[in-house]
Image (cartoon, rainbow over all chains, first blue to last red; front, side, top):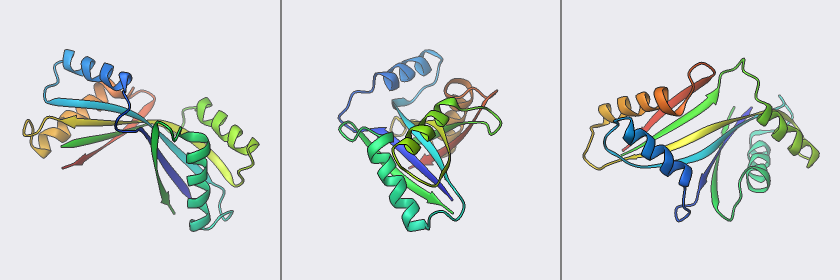
Length: 82
Length: 82
């Protein structure tokens, strides 16, 4: 079983790295780009048979909240793939 | 319109950052974690009405290939959201 965790900055939080990417792609000639925001993406492979889907989701959400994201400035989203 | 770009290391490529995270979550007491891999996630907001869905996808894929990912060691995936 695999958990996918997406971590993004909250909406009000400045994202200078995203702004730098936006500026770079504009310089490279891409048009129509209004905004770029960068986040993080984690794939967590769970040991086979160690956890059921519900427990895997709970474990991944706890990991996202406690380790992978900073809940003060970041949002996270968890997806479970069998 | 919004394009979401996911960039992950190719399967054979070592991911020391992912290994460090796996080691950290194990030390913190999480069980059943077989592997962790870290990737990058980008949200690209396109200017309203600037591009149709097909063109937006093409632009996002070109950006992913040329700017956001290193195709030698990374894979990328593009999703378009209206």
